[in-house]
Length: 370
View 1 (cartoon, rainbow, N blue to C red):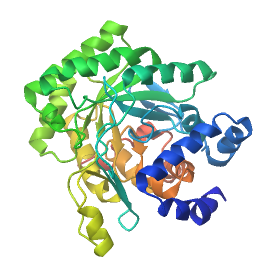
View 2: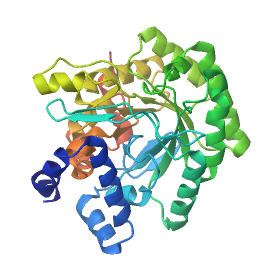
View 3: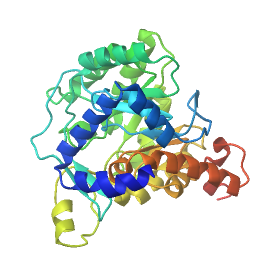
View 4: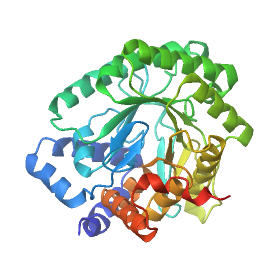
């Protein structure tokens, strides 16, 4: 019923709005719902899926579905995401200094491709403000059922030479208020950021972040987030460097600079926009990357799979190719919050169809015997 209402009423209204304005209004609406107990109850009743316990890193999650970074840039809707039934979320990205991001327009969507393009540029309130927001949120969570990762980026005004200080400042500020960190070196929208995925620069950055986490008290995993636009050689270097630095896992993948073939005039105008593309066109490539990581690490390194997931079949493909858990973003935009229950309940059916007792048994299933 809620899915039908979304498609008939909400989605047509959103389609008429500028992408960024629609996003901002959606975030504001969610923020308001957190203050109205009856609506919180309705969200749980309407959208929360059945439990599908799984493990990720050393966490026990109520289900493997997470919210990708970029949706909740201010960490202002944590309670709403928990009510909607996510197993974990990734908030931010946060930089040491507040920044307004790139010039508008900077967010675009196309339903024919099922894709988004953004060149936001890490617009965020800064990690100091985010820490205050998260502290207030955590004080309201009585029985937390969802893990929170903070996505960390480099301030635009900070050079790559000073990047470690920027990331570590944010990590230290947020350490008390989140369950782990994702070091984002793969956004295409901050000039020079992807250069931090290379060799010594990556090693230096990750060594610093892992050391800072231990200095803050330890026990909170540090993951790295990579681009899909990498050769196998580059990918293996990043994997080996990240594992050597002590990273607990990897998020694969960020948005892509690649573009699909145009479908029509409107589609052509969409794909001509600069920025990172997410959604359905990224699905195949992100799965390829996940498979390569799983094979290269013998399935011994946790992978959060993200890119083009809009159905339970998509999520199952990511998991059976090596992902420990998955995240969504674009499908939440195009299909609404009912997609959460659709995916989680669909994964439960997949387990039964394949005679498996737990989701952990499905990780890498498609690669066994290759």
